[in-house]
Amino acid sequence: MTSTYINIKLKNKIMKNVFIITTFLVSGLAFSQVGINTVNPQATFHVDGAKDNPEIGVPSNNAQSNDFVVTQQGKVGINTITPTSTLSNQGSFQSAYKEVATSYELTDKDYFITYTGGDGGDLITLPAAAGGTNSFTGRVYKIKNLSSHDLSIVPNGADRIRTITDPLSTGYIVSSGRFVEFVNNNNTTGGVWDLASTTNTSTSNVSMSYYKVKLPNHAANGGQDFTNHTVTTYDTADWYVISAQSFQQTNFPPSMIVTYEYQGTPLLSDTNVIVGVSNNTGYGDIFTANVSSIANNGTGGKTRVNVRFARADNFINPWGAIFDVNLLFLHF
Image (cartoon, rainbow, N blue to C red; front, side, top):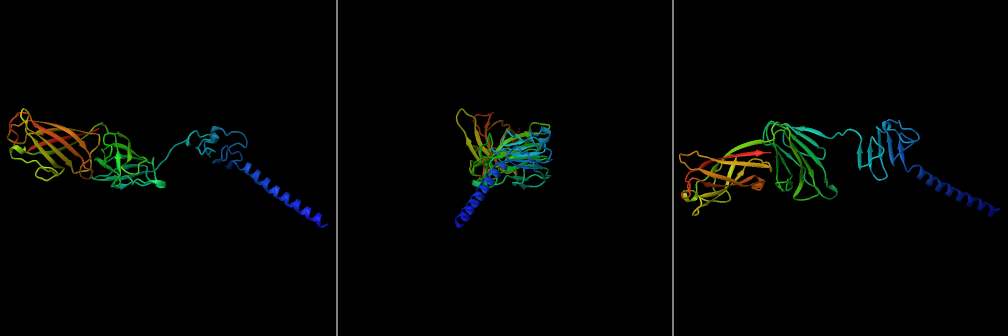
């Protein structure tokens, strides 16, 4: 009697375990695809927003227009149950939009920024690059300048912007009516932001800015050569003369190489410069002037322009006066 009772109890326990295992197996098969508002899920996770999918068969395109799915491959479909990319969105796209009128530092909540400020000197600052699990490689910012003056886009701290003509720039100037786009690359130091695109939405494809600077008198005729901004006599409010080096050789006209540094926000990396000497003195001196370089590599990333001047009307006598120099910048 006791033996029979034990056998029956053992059989019941075995049957209970088999039932539990079977239940798990059936549940696993039944819930390999999860459906919300549908008994007919078409992907690993399927939400039928309007609850208008049929109980059997594939939903029509119209029925899919309110669906959301995640496939076994990790692809996400919005308004489609068959995503062919990591994210397939068969509908409109909406992102963060903000208008600012003063200096502003971008955050992870920003995407499209329109600047409408009324005063010059404002900055849009890109966020500091991050590495490891905090990296935001591929993050995109779009910025449009609807003000009447230039807008400076600057990276954070030691970060830099990579452009075509200036690989490591400390800033980028967006002219009035111009649009730019930046994307964070996979660098953690140096050029961490790429200039992805730029376009001009104004009526003109070229914007211009004009400045007047000084040409020092030649060292062989009362002037002096200097480096590292040791002479401030020739500075203007906008431009400092960082260095001046005079040359006088037989069979060559007297000449001088001058480095000017712009004290405002760095100029566009795709800027061209037209330079000319205007004779503001009583002398009849005539000069040629050629720009040898322009780059944002000066003090704190300021724009520096190197110009070589030569006296074209006299191969013997250097100039002994201070002349005005006109700098015309063309921003494309």
